[in-house]
Image (tube, rainbow, N blue to C red; front, side, top):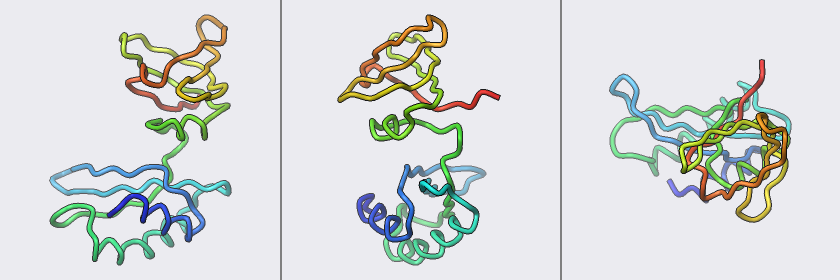
Length: 143
């Protein structure tokens, strides 16, 4: 299914598409749709969205063959894959792995064009990181 079409359908459901992924677990294909909303995501909302997009995916499947559909929130600790993900996570704690193999933890302060600004937990200073230097990123919750 076209991601833009899926975004539009989800917007009509009152939620925003965060991400999708196709994984194989126990020899089963699983198409995961992660959704967000300013009101939060409940089990009822996931069920409602599943009922709406399931018939659409039946006619326009995301993959050949059988698969399972899962609709959920990306969670408190979630992957950050796009600039938009970073923009929507300002104020949260993040872990980054950079292209030089270094790792940084800190509070996401702002995003300007292709630059990510963090308050580094180690140096206690604001640092600027180019988005293109980030190999892996995710939010984390300090328990």
